[in-house]
Amino acid sequence: MNQVMNLPLDSATTPLESLATSFERSTSKICLRQTSLTDSLAWAHYQNENDRLYYVNDKQHTLSLYLSGGYDTHRTDVHSTFGAPGKFCLMPKGAESHWQLGQTQQFMHLYFSDDYLKQLALKVFDIDPRMLQLPELTFTDDAATEALFRHCMATSDWRNKDDHLAMEQATNTILISMLQNMGITKLLTPIKGGLSPKTATLVCDYMQANFHRQVYLAELAELAQLSEYHFCRMFKQSLAQTPQAYLLAIRIEQAKLRMRTGMKSVADIALQCGFANQSHMGRYFKKLVGISPRQYRNLATD
Image (tube, rainbow, N blue to C red; front, side, top):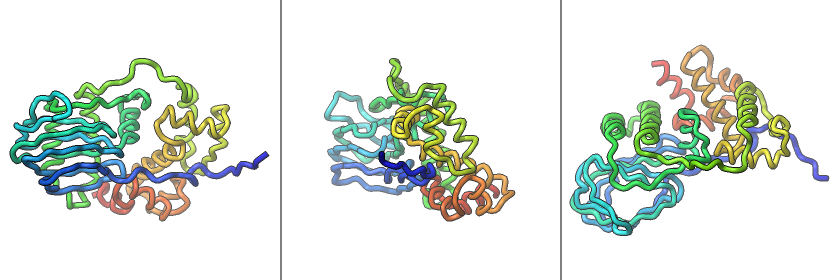
């Protein structure tokens, strides 16, 4: 029998997906500005005119808002209406589309990962992540989300790193508005597989109560009365992320909470939240939040 090493749960944490990448055949598109807030969230502001364009993003979903122009723009691969200022397009990850663009237009793209959206939906609306399905939308209206785009992002200084925390919070508000107001569909039939709701709650509550120490995969598998292999597979089916990533997210949120109080040093907070040391926390904090722990603390306590 092969011996299984009982390793700490956070020893196998895998990096999140890289920044948004897309395949666009364009001869005249100009990127006016762009910024990455975290590994899961990015923004870009474009200008284009009189172009034929093919678009697909294999890594992340894209929510696009026309800021100006677009009156002659339409899709050529399906029947569509025409664009205009205030029109949204939602292009799920992997969806392909062909476009004919008219006179000068500006638009903003919000790129966000599938895992990030599902965890946000779980946290805010208690939606089973497996049931969340993004529809492909072309030239739809949503006044509330448009106002957030224009007020929170279009007028922001993307070059100012000190504003990134506020921009991340605004982006979350935009995604929540999108889920609420754009008719985002959910599968109505129960999805087979994964942990039972009772077991998922038991395991998640256990991680929430023990984030401050090393948590072993064997502990969680025993709670769920499953083998480690089957537990990992079923946990990801239910929560749309690995146990390692779920625990890491808890630790980062707890660290952010402590930094906002300003009562402890960053090194002390790292140890209190289950990280090996300050450097260990800093590496994952910057990857997930987009800024260093010290930068976050300075912004949060100003």
